[in-house]
Image 1 (cartoon, rainbow, N blue to C red):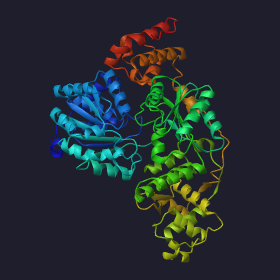
Image 2 (cartoon, rainbow, N blue to C red):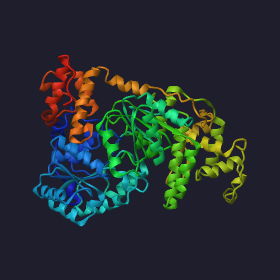
Image 3 (cartoon, helix red, strand yellow):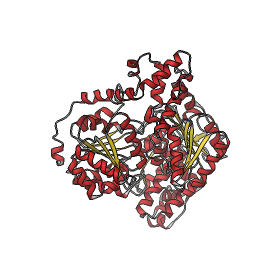
Image 4 (cartoon, helix red, strand yellow):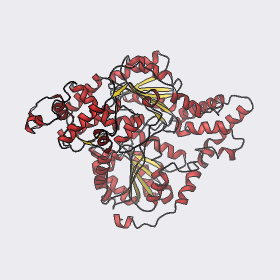
Length: 621
């Protein structure tokens, strides 16, 4: 079926999806953004959906797969992610399987038989496996109804996690007769979205860009002082909660796991240099148990769909804004409050820049990576609400959030209007065509070869900022960028342009406050707001009953060797402990319990609730 024919498919009413949403998944209503995407897919349209982590992207192809029938193929980059999603779907009574390099011949034979029988609803496939001619043959014979591409940003050279094998997906889609396609990602700025569309679709898809905002996440950043103490102070506000501490190197993960273990936490390292079995043991403990902390490199994360991670701490500066956004996005996927802290220092910035320069990539890619690192540093030095600065990077505007360190604690600032005017004057007088270093040279009066070549030494702004050091001007550029006065064109050589807000400052209509000495180590003041808020969400739940329900969940997860959330996520157990159902019919009203889950686990968890009501503690097995 070609693209034109696919789009003429008879639309399926959304009511059919709503019915399965409740009966299978146990949800009374769609989350924001889900319904219109599912309706577009059911209407026969190709779709690109950019939705924040935790907003329910997977349901946007899983539910259409059930409504439409036939086979849906899901392209997923990680075996661990496929494994967990297949387990979760099977817990809902949905026929699902995964095809990847970890399968043995017997498993692949069974999948082939299921495909030929038409009994599979969802098949998860690694992109490398999908590239094989025999796989394409199987899928053509089986008749694919829908192709879902998860982590679609991996197809883009502008994305933060580019994977060459994703480039073949456009051709594979054509080999499957232009099958209806939905591409999904949580992190894609405008250049990345354009690249995804160009690489994957023959004609423009229906594009949905949900807000990148994750209001349940508390954002905080701090200059490094005593890093170990800062991390321990932060973690101390989240005792008994699951969390991730991201580190820049393998050695640092080992050191922080040891530090946290010595402080009495259940902490485990995770990095690519560990033995496979040891790495998997750390991951399984994190997924199956409550209150485990993982000290990890960025090798840990994509595909870790644990919904009840209550905090993410970066002990070192992340790689770029996209990486930062995705890594903090692993917290609070259940929608409950979660806490984040990022520590940074000059050594971090130097190391990140060295890695960019030493990378064996094109000069163009290095240039893009430099600009993305600069944008992250601007976020660290933001003079206003961090959420405003973060969302501005993705092209959104917002009001001050009240849930970041700058909104809560404020910053030491000064009237930077004149400095901002000098910087923006340099941008305008050079035609909005140049990047930071050239403009800094003009402001400080440094007559470089480029300055002389363009005759910029004769500009009125040449040397007007000589009382400040070059490093100070770089910080000012980052801060006025974070304040929305200037815009950075990443693709066009990192050139700066002045925004409407910037013009108002340049003309003297508005003023701007800048931060004073943003790289000075702070006092380690860390609020417990998100940790307290997370606890408040379960305040109506009897703590002993909730503990008993979690104990049973942990026992079942270990027994079945699946992540705890595959049994039930925290949100379901909290709702159960609040409602305290007195019948199996009332169990079905609990958020996240559908008919299959009720039949599989309802009696066991109901028994715990009843034992608690009778004055017992409930049993775990």
